[in-house]
Image (cartoon, rainbow, N blue to C red):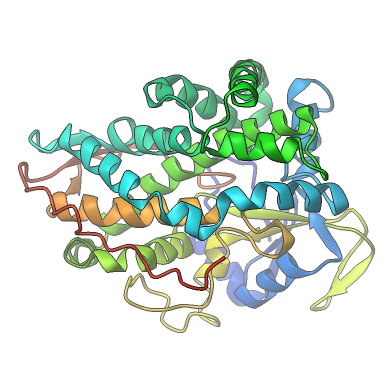
Length: 408
């Protein structure tokens, strides 16, 4: 059996994948071997004999030169060794849990503001009216960009998100136009923060740019463009997948609306069963053996997130339940390439989802919606909902910030 991960009709969550997982821990694909079980997937992601395999993504799709190919090689997804460690070390302070936790009240205010815009109608197109503006405005808050410019930032980020599409080659002109636009915009922001520092992420990174083990101006530009699009795109997609998952389990949706403290656990459970990043890539740095599989130097291994997250060997009761503590999911990756922005994603979704459930307790999908292929990075294009209008706003202290004492 071999899977075609590039086929838009292929579904990484399908019974076909589950059946293959019962036969053995890996399966061949058009993009290397796919890892299907949790223990082996976790081991691969943490094994230093592998490097992050995304650097070869453009070439695997016939893209060997040009602006997109060059930029892709320089993002954190593609860097390795000292360059990766140095840039990640300089970016990390801006993403510490305490820094992000302090933004919870702003996230809550923003979520309520957006819900207020459609609460009395009893219907909403969830992507355009909540998920996209919420994700884009949070990126604006994080970077210190004017919130009123979120639509332009979102437009660039949406086009750049096609970098992860299974048909990426057909989108290169659009991706490169967005790269030019967002890069020029952020260059102006950097110039402003050099002249007029503020308490925001760009200023933090500008100061890292000026420090002893500094980011070059070029590295700073590459990092900001990547952070702006990756943070917005993944949060928007994951919010849509979260609503789809929760609404398929009405008891869990109602429970979340009644118990906002379950928001963080709901995020973990959603990412376990319905992650936007459907596979995570690794490339062998040497000829190696792992669990009996020979992988030659340069061989590609894809960790299938949903298959690993629902593996009954690691999750004896793998059904969806936001009250159950599980083995760690792999939706943010693992090892040295564990997602740098995971605190942001975890926090903004843990705030938004209980508010949505509380204020739309009877929400249901209004039709099937429109969805990206369930391979590569997936998520909603359109997701209309119906609900009972006019549920009152929760009190300002309805969401209690978590105790982060001792957290980094």
